[in-house]
Amino acid sequence: MGSTAAAKPRRFKLRYLVIGGVLVIAACGTLLVTTVFTLTRPVVAGADAFMGALKDGSYEQAYQRAAPSLQQELGGAKAFGDGIGAYRPREWSWSQRSIRNNVGNVSGGVTWQNGNTGTAEIQLHQVNGEWRVVAFRFN
Image (cartoon, rainbow, N blue to C red; front, side, top):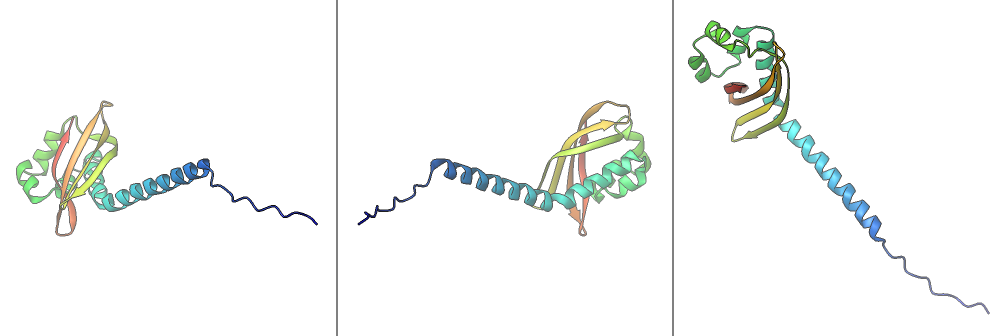
């Protein structure tokens, strides 16, 4: 009669564990980045509206994107436009974005109308359900 060999148990190979671990880490990273971008989208939209108005030279519109506290500091749309000077943006991209305790922050690189490059940092608060600029720094 034939002999029956006992079936050998299959061993989980280390490489499958490593590949599975890498895939899980990649999926978690993707989920985290997607969540951060989704949650901060309204803050970025507020900052983009402010920068877009400056780009177009629409200082009244940019001034309206400012919170009342910043509007008071700026002293009016005309004074604000006069003070912008060389800091009128041509293009920008946000490399950092966050929201903590209803305070939104974005920062990133910017190219000014004169071709120089620099950075822009914008802080926003929610005012009547709308993200409005409370502070900005250009250099």
